Image 1 (cartoon, helix red, strand yellow):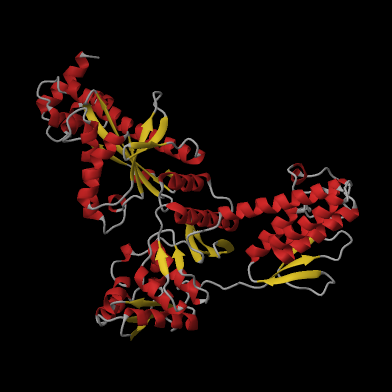
Image 2 (cartoon, one colour):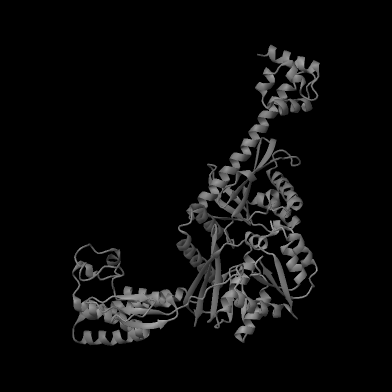
Length: 611
């Protein structure tokens, strides 16, 4: 906790309600964060108010603030321009600072006897031939991958002719993506001819390469060299297939656009970009950064930082979710680009598919950086995709009702945090108002009580004071219809789905809005939902059996003269078990509040007679 919070809070409350930039400094006077505000007083005072509302990143920053300065501007837009300028100048620790590591890239053709074609970041003085430079590593790797597959060149690291004949050909030979010179069956002149063809393809592009090969194929056919003509025909077909594949990741409606998505892991996040020009994907970038719970703010800062180091801004920017101050950011981008720039969050169609592709790319890059994700992480990502959620549901609440023919009706609430049971957050409910056997009414009552507690405790952001990312109900459309009015009443927007069972009481599907979503194809998500359904059922039925057993034992105690519900409850509260009550002495029974000497004797005599 920052000991200077009271001083900083008082200073913040004295700020004007005007737009401007605030500058946070540590004890050494070093600038650690720069931000802009529509109202300096409102924004800055939030940092030094309740510390329970802050994300982990903000808490770390606030704990290091010793003092702050501010600069008043005429508008929030001017504040944004000033903020960008100051961040570039001072590079504060807690601002998002993306590194522009776009260097030059080359395609290298070695001078070896059996030439190799590789991607390189530097041009060396080694007698090799270089094609380039290119500013995009994506373009280099994609072109190189296509050339090797089309001309069936090795994609391995074997050294020829040293490694010829030492091993069997790899899988690429059997799927017709490599001619397998390692087998010793490829002539040197054929290999050189393939390398020359690949170089022509890389230098001239697919259109020129096809034209040249068509001319050569005609000559071979006229000279009755049908084997050579067939080889060129196959290469032309391979290039056409590559072009068709590229169309899958092209955008026809917007010729110039960038697509952004964020994928978050346990500690790290990946910010990925897909860049389109002339309707085709021409570049990808990704940035690894610290995880941040405030995604709308994170998206704003990331895009602001990204285009602060880029001049080519497209007419359309597509993002994967809500963004803070979208209009202000769009105005800044428009001003920087010198023409209208639109920011969109797609909900369907081609643009949504592009966002999903970008998000998948971000996930892959995050895997590479942090190692393979755990099964629970994979399951959460799968579940988000299946249910159409913007983010993996890291905090899931699940509910189930349990009773016996309408008697002793209870509910259980289990919590799964990051895909694993979070038992300290489990809750039990005794159904008080819903009629026995009315599962819909019972579910409605439970959610009503749960969100009433949320309104009372939301300042704490703990227990009932924390909203889940997803609610799963044991049941189908009936349960969903019963609880949706409750969420609407409280103004709570949390996705709600039902877990549908088959005739064998096993998870079959997810219910939503009158329809069912099959999840069996998503193995990890299916396993997670099945585990949640089994766990909430176990927890609810366990509580029901405990309550039922207690009520049965209370009924036995109430057979004793003078022992009613209140005294029976008091005895169980004190002794915990029936066996403890049976073996208790007169003195021990008298220590229970409300139990008289007559009651104690009657209890003792009853159990002595019924041994």
